[in-house]
Image (tube, rainbow, N blue to C red; front, side):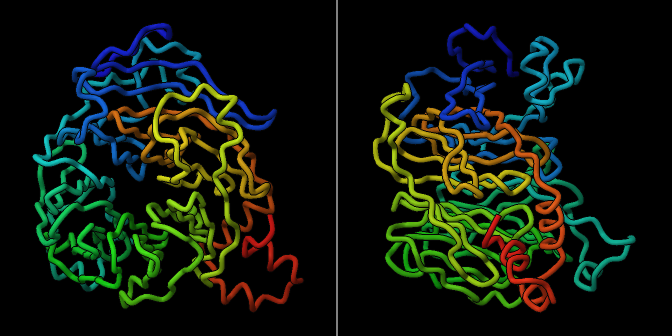
Length: 429
């Protein structure tokens, strides 16, 4: 059970801490730390191997949140965080209904191994009740949302949401499963990325049958992500070559080998309309790509001139970028780095519009239906931030809508001025 405390309360194990602080680097949109989830364990276990939060995830419909809190445990909780004792001021920032349900629906899942990869997915609803040929040949045990956990021993365990009932235990990887992503098209599949330098594609409609083994990477595979339309798969890894690969989810062959980073690439994410791809690297940069052409659109450098003016806790002092996530309107991008800072970037300005202290951050993800960003840290904690939403222009709404349904080739064939094509392909904002 997560309990809210008064804003001046200290960090108590097993609590839901409410915050009311922020660091604002300009008069533009700000990030506000509004809540913190703390594992129910003695603080003496913090910052020891195995206590890290390597993964945080929202369900596709925004109704559940999961985080790996270290020592084999994943907690699955209803979202938004709702409790009648939360002040209306805080609730409004989290878009809470203060008369809503309690936290009694939370589940504590012991995965038996340290959890490195985490994702929640769901099969796509059938159109008009019609099943595809592949679906009609099988009877799947999966009818709703699924929580997937990638473990230190190479196994992947899938749990039913919200019951936390174990569905499958997939075996095949030789070591740590670092990242997981779902493919939801006419089929329902899972992609896993591992330190054994491979990706594996599993058919969840066939009880987790292994469909493909992808072994083009030559070093650890840190992360994988699937485009919103499930047509493309991105995988990123270590080494000096083959760091960022884009795959077709039809043929499972590499369609682009993206070059531009100078060190291991550890995180990747698609924008909500699938028109952009962000990759984060130990070379202190985030690169935003056009996944349809393989072109690098912008390179965001993580230097830390603001660190001296911020109250940053002791932690790592490199500029390694750990994670990246796009906001839901697709105009901002969040990044977490080892210099102790959370940054919210404006893609239009190509610079941070908000910088906040976040010591030992490892991962981040935006809620699918709000302006809340979740971040995980090395001590097994989760922090929730509200990020001031950018009001998209009518032009951007039209662009995003068009990019959901139109290929880059179709756009280039449009009989429109060059400047409009540049706008539609995100070469200008």
